Length: 531
Ligand SMILES: NC(=O)C1=CN([C@@H]2O[C@H](COP(=O)(O)OP(=O)(O)OC[C@H]3O[C@@H](n4cnc5c(N)ncnc54)[C@H](O)[C@@H]3O)[C@@H](O)[C@H]2O)C=CC1
Ligand SMILES: O=C(O)C(=O)COP(=O)(O)O
Image (cartoon, rainbow, N blue to C red; front, side):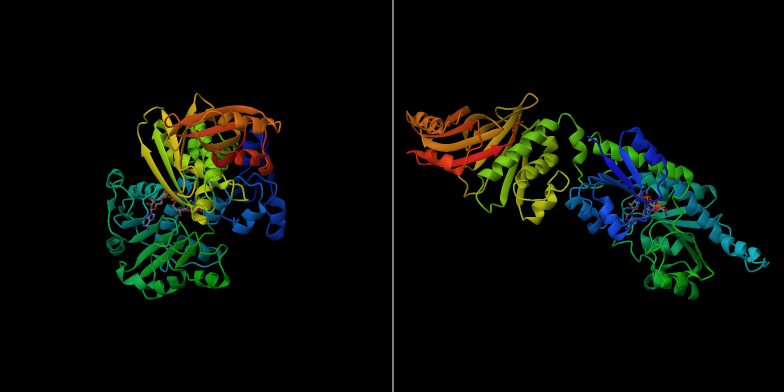
């Protein structure tokens, strides 16, 4: 299969090189926006972005062929992951390719703040000379507060420790062991704000981190401290930045990131304050970081398109499992069974129970995605895949219950779907023999053996002589060949279930003679793709 990828942002050329080496057609176009972008994007299987292109629901809708969005970098706030997930589009990033560069930039900002480097450079360049005004402060023996002791925060800690700083951090998700190994003391946020001479943030922008510092909590800050933000604009409340300095809470602020990039006119005005130093989102802008993220994202996207690996994927949490050879037969089994279930369920049924037993239980999560794919493919016009199956299930109000049992009585593995009360058949179980022999093995407690493929007529009947002969002659009269059949019964002469595979896709009209046979009940017709 051949794939086509569009590079939309200023991503290093190595990206194209990797795609080309891997036989993927690649086009670079930085200058697309609006309708032009919508028109161009239609035919691509993948797009590569940095932080400059907003991957909105509209962009995703226009990209009819899209399978993967690759972010050559970390932050994905410019990508609507929810909308991508709903459309079954994989979103991936390169979590560590620009860590060192951003950490180095942060350290640079801390030192630049401490020694007024940008302001004094400007002074000299404009023909001025003022040594008194630009008196600085040492960072040695000062406390650096880090909010977010993740990849970048940790690298900043290591580097600034070497400058003789005491490092303290707030990160509710960081382990004490990790902090100890870095020589960092973990504190609560309010404690950290009270002791930090310099505060640097390295978290995503979330409901919790937005406006983490503002005039509202300025009282908690150590007087005359410095603020650094090389993470995401808005973690410090931008409208309050000038006031924080003017009211004497903060001595200086260094920003690499802004709530809108480039900043709005109002924001540009605020940034003119002489004690605020600024760079235009340069944290990751080094040759080394850009080469790393470009190469990484191209390989990751190529692997994903070729279904080899899903490293770096941010949605479809269980998708990485589908490259596991062991899980593939179960995925197919689950999807087929889901398809049977929806064909047997009552109209408007919205309750399904999935039971996994045996060794397949360890893949239960992705098997549920696959059953849902089988169920929903009959309902949803948009293409359903393992990434968006749960999204659609939720949107359609399906209630799902999942249970697992480590052992089965008769089979190594069994997947069972329980249907709604109104359905003719309430419980259907299937397994896979070998690599690709998918079979229904039980319906409503009746042992049966039927391949999960092609066209199947299922009915209940009283276990008496001649029933099968009547059904086969009703089929033969219409020149319909029986491919396979399976009978299940409880006890001799009692109720029985018959499943007949036929060689053609039958119409309602063709089913009527069977439906009208005396003794045939609960006739259902199921159609499945042939393996
Ligand atoms: N300026 C630039 O060019 C760049 C900026 N970034 C940004 O830097 C930030 C950090 O990136 P990484 O270190 O790679 O991410 P990471 O995921 O390794 O670390 C984030 C840390 O923040 C912590 N965290 C999350 N919510 C928190 C909260 N409410 N309070 C305290 N800690 C919290 C997490 O536990 C985690 O340890 C991201 O926002 C990323 O987008 C990343 C690369 C370049
Ligand atoms: O990776 C990140 O999160 C960054 O902020 C870097 O953004 P950029 O790729 O330089 O536009």
